[in-house]
Structure formats: structure tokens, C-alpha cells
Image 1 (cartoon, rainbow, N blue to C red):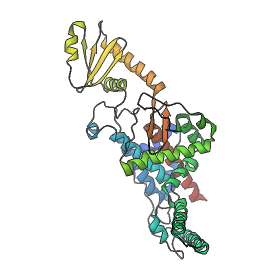
Image 2 (image 1 turned 120 degrees about the vertical axis):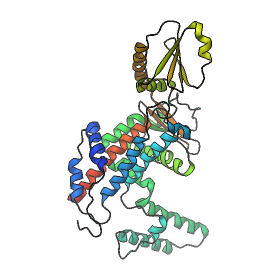
Image 3 (image 1 turned 90 degrees about the horizontal axis):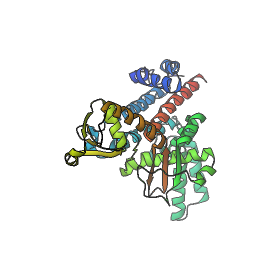
Image 4 (image 1 turned 90 degrees about the vertical axis):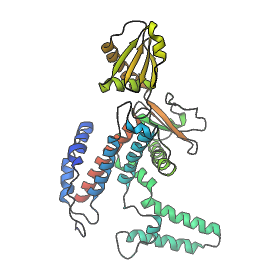
Length: 377
């Protein structure tokens, strides 16, 4: 291709070599090195797609850096859920970026594109034809004018709408295997009869969900993720709570598991004659029962165990982590819903944040492959 006003993309983002390529090899046995080599050698008319890939990669890396397995961290000072909400938001914006088929234009800019020159002249001709159609039909009332504006906006959204980009990402960028993977873990239902949901409750797949086709399921999932994970956070400040991701108020057992795995855990045991001292413990942030032991985890990463018998600390920690991993591997999941959306996004058997991250990384790989194929055609 003729390069009219920019130089080659140099592939200067070190994250590509040190992070993206190793991740995709490990997760999918997919080596993108040859594809990046082609992009580096190819000149592009307009902005080189490599720069958008850089921006996507940076956002995904930031979402990873925000994750922590520590039960206590500085992010908790910002309030429960803010950290995961930001992670999910960053990930969801990459769906939009990777699904875009054209450079983003505001509605106003789209109305002003030149039909005689520039890369949007074809769209400008279509826009003019639509305007002529509306004028021929006649605009004689306020309702006619409102309907005409809505029709113009619909035409705009077909090429530059964020919702359209989400749908393209899920239906055309991801592979069928990727979509099948999503359908294993996520489903959507109406929340008109939703119970008082909590992190310990996971709704069942409704019968109507099983009756619709796979393509319609993917469309509903894409639309719900767009609204819940991106739009609600962006416009209303609504935070998505993923209780399975270990970085916001996870179940008590996961807090204790994280403390054990951190390696800095202190353990104190209490027996019946010390129950009074046990009850007076302050700064307790987690409490549960396990194998006839009463457990409390305090702010300074000390696990307090009240037991009727002597406790082998090393064996206890090993058994607790093993048990906890097995249990969480089965029941991990949750529901996300908002009354104004009338929808429930349910996930089971996986962390929602980790699943969305994995989807984004695979989508990045597929978009790079499609872009390279386009350069060779």
C-alpha cells in the first residue's frame, strides 16, 4: 500500500514481545510473531493499525496490573468494587476498539464529511442519498422531523456506533470456538423475577435462554456487556462487582486462602480456655468456620484459629488451600443486574474478569491476523 502521510509502525511496544506473544503461546499455542513482522514491514495509508494495537495492549496490561491476590491492598481505600470495576471497564473498551471497522466519528463530524474527497466520501454519498429520500418523503410535522433525525442517526450508528462495534467484535472478530467458550460460562435473563442477589447466589439458566439460537445468545451477551460493563460505569458510575476475582471483597475463604498463599501469614491458635481473648480480637475483616475450627483473619494478616484440639498449622494450611480451590472451582460465579436494565448477566465456573480478559486477548490476536491477511489481499 502507498503510505501517504505516516512512516512505518516500528512495533516499539515492548509488551508485544515480552507479554502478548508469550501469553498467546501459553493459552492458545498461537505464535503471533510472524504477523507482527508483517505489520512492521507494511506501510499504511492513514494511521497504521499497529498504533491502535499498541493502545489496546496498553489497556489490557493496565487491567492486569490492577489485579492483586493480596487480601489487603491500597486500592481498598477507594471503596469496595472500584478496582474490579475499572479492570472490567478497561477490558470492555478494547472490545469496542477491536470491533471498529472505521475510525470513530461523532454524529456531528459524520454529518460534515465531504462527499467529493477523503476516505469517507462513500459514506457521505450514502448520507446525501438518505437525506434526499427523507426530503422527498416530506417533513411536515414535528414527528416527521424527529423520525427523520432518528433514521439519520441509525444510519450513522451502522458505521460508527459503539454498539455496532461490540457486535462485530463478538460475531466477526472472535472465532466460533471463542464464542462456544463464552456460552459455556455466561447467560442472560430478565430480572423481573430476580431474587435479592448476593455473592453466594447464582441464578439458574432460564428455559427461554436455552430455546434461542447461538447467534442470538451472543448478541444478547455482547449488548449486556456493553451496557453493564462499559456504559453504566462510564455514564452513571455504576461499579461491576466480580466477587470471584480476589481483588474486591471475595468470599471469606478466598481471603484466608490468599493470606496463606502470600507466605507472610502469621497464625495464632486459641483453645477453650482462651475464648475470651479470641472474642476480643479487633480489626477482624474475615470470619468463617472450617472443619470444626472457628477462623478469623485480622488486618495484619494474622489468622486466628479457635479449636477444641491441637492444630498442626502447616497441615491445616495445606488442607485448607486444597479444599478451598476445589470448592471455588465448582461454585465460582455470580449475577450482575440493574433494575433499569431489566437484565441479569450470570456467570458460573469462572471469574468474569478473567474470562473477559481472555476474550480480549484472543480478540486482539484474531484482529491482528485479519489485518495481516488484508495487507496481503
